[in-house]
Image 1: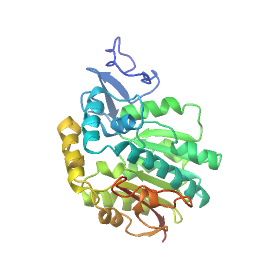
Image 2: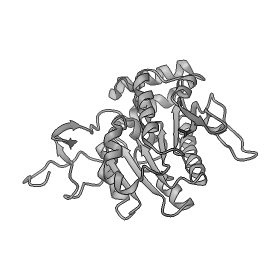
Image 3: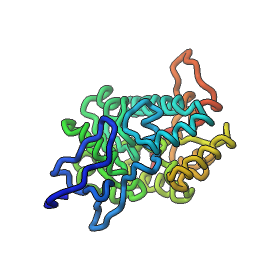
Image 4: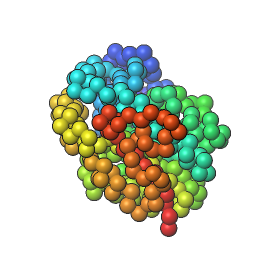
Amino acid sequence: MPGRSAEPEPPPRVEGYRRPHRHEAGCTRRNGGIVAETGGTERLGFDPTVANYARMFDYYMGGKDNFAADREAARRMLELAPELPLICREGRRHVAKVVRYLVGAGIRQFIDLGCGLPTVGNVHEVAQAAAPGSRVVYVDNDPVVVLHSQALLEQNDDTVVIEADLRDTKHVLGHPRVKELVDLTRPVGVLLHYTLLMVPDEEEAARAVADYRDAVAPGSHIAISHSVRDPRPDVTAKLASIYRDSGGGPQHGRLRSKADVERLFAGLRLVEPGVVYIPRWRPEPGETLPGPETVWSVGGVGVVER
């Protein structure tokens, strides 16, 4: 924190770690962790000894921003489900397809809720390649994710990163940086890719989607993708147990079903082909598609009409 005479060194980190600049308010280090300070309160946002979903995704994608706890949990999961890296790659491909579709539908501003650690094919890269000048807001509640993303996007005037909880819609949409970039009187693309996995309560997840639906302009689109238990219920239950045992918390106690995900689109007009397993969402002609037993994630896009 500015003004401190000394601060402990961060724990050993793989290549890619960046110490925050002094001008980056809102975070400090304490006892080897990063503490986010918001509204006068503190919460520990980083513990390298506890498995983290975003860092495990990074490991599956071949990244370097992960720790021993993440790799250990990921390897145990791979013994049960060797398809996990394929699911991650297909999830990334799905995000790109959705963003290109939204650009084609005229969307030029995006809010990515729960963006995760930076990797190839981020929303701003896809959107701004298809339509230069597209504006993107990334939102995450992990201070490490926010710091990494800020470092990568310092020179991009059409993209910002904020630390916030996606469930606090008023805070997200009322944030000064968001208001600078996003005009809520015009259509916006709201992206919830794998983020609602971290909101296990059904009513709370549905309320979060409905809050964004009600806050954005008609013509806006809300995209959701979500791993589901239907094709491999026994395996997904065991994976959840590994994540809990690794310190990841109760979030993965129970994956939703495809029908549960469909209900999250209440009040929206679904874009064809509806909520489907992600390789089947607008595939290329002649494309060979992996089955649900291999890629057990679904996705869909809904349009705000009122």
